[in-house]
Every structure is written in structure tokens, then in C-alpha cells.
Image 1 (cartoon, rainbow, N blue to C red):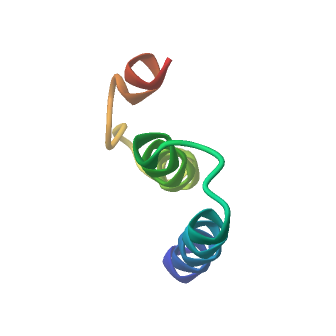
Image 2: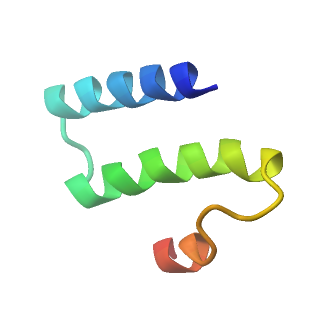
Length: 56
């Protein structure tokens, strides 16, 4: 899962460098949101409680 997420982040960042369609902080939030979305179902405790309300 981690390797897939890293590839996702790499592709997203390369695309963003070629054509920035959002801010750097929005890009960061997408990357963090993706890893949290993958981890939350696997862990007994939320690794980042409140992240969804922060990003909204």
C-alpha cells in the first residue's frame, strides 16, 4: 500500500510541476488525504482525527 501511495504522490507532483492547477498546500492535502483514506480502514484508531474537518 505504501509503495502505491508513493507512486501516486510522485505522479501527482510531477504533473503538478508541469502544470500547477492548485496551490502547494492543496496538493499536500490531497496527498495526505489519500494516505489517510487508505490507512483508516486498516487501523483500530484513526491516525489523524479531525483531518477531514480541517480540510473542509
